[in-house]
Image (tube, rainbow, N blue to C red; front, side, top):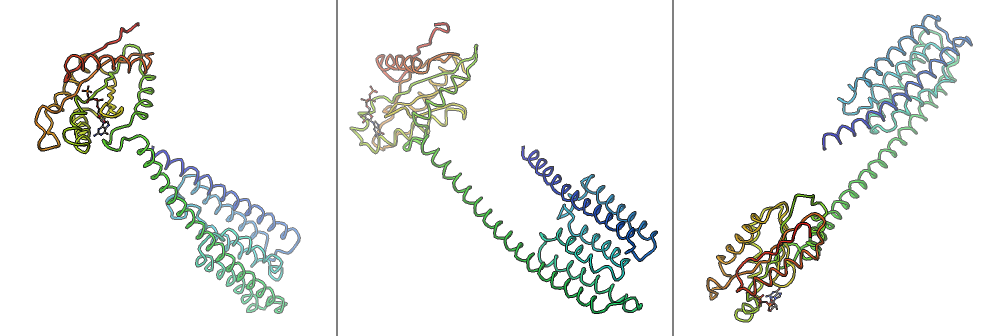
Length: 376
Ligand SMILES: Nc1nc2c(ncn2[C@@H]2O[C@H](COP(=O)(O)OP(=O)(O)OP(=O)(O)O)[C@@H](O)[C@H]2O)c(=O)[nH]1
């Protein structure tokens, strides 16, 4: 379950980063178009073979990136979108392109901004690295031209460098702002997740409170009825479940003789004895007062009766919670019935109640049955 969620999360991530790569590749396509426009218009100052070689190498570098994304190798890296390597490669190719434009490169300076736009979500420190690289690449070209005597208009070159510097400084500030904004959003998301977790915990507590009897820790009547209805609706032909009403004997006398608090502890004793006799799937609830109800899924008359007898004996042999209560003071009576497919729960409870009435009438401390005819 967890593995398949991880897998689908990874697929969604891969789709996202591949889309981003697609955008970068499309931008390269436009850049190549621009290169060939400059060649056709006579702005490109290197031989046309250089433009061909550059175009082939750019296409090759993008094919390599495509292969990395296609095979999913990018997922091994901390940043699976490979932003930094892509920006680095783009800056190298852009510098190569602008270098061959000579004095005409100034009008295409904006391409540095275009490349760095892909890096705006990097941490500011990393972005600064690429901004500095962009500036040094441009200044390097201007110096090279100056050294070689190709620089015809130094003032314009100085102005272009200034414009690039100001633009890059502004972008660095912008990236810092975006970074802080994202940090704050992340913190809010974590806080929201923590709140959601607390709310879920409180909901679970409320559900427990709403379904549990406070004194005994067993299910309460309402929760039992809900569970029993759903158990009944799942019953298939040929299968049956056991339903029993359990009533502690002479409980009023215990209360009268030993006090209400001891009576409460007797109810708790019953709950803990019953828990140790029953399986996790069995549904036991406090039906009201000193009466309990038990549902045993998937059983038959013999097994069910044996289970209730075991419970009756275990309670009769339980240690009384009060010192001056003697052994034999604790006992219970049980009325048993079976649930079949299509049975009505109220009618089944009535059947169990009839059997319980008989158990009381026959002297208590016993189990009586009232099996319903299967096709009644
Ligand atoms: N201590 C305590 N007593 C309770 C609680 N709920 C109900 N009772 C008492 O349980 C007693 C039930 O008495 P009866 O219904 O006469 O039943 P009984 O004395 O057990 O007699 P039989 O069922 O006929 O054996 C009453 O006195 C109730 O006050 C409870 O939560 N704590």
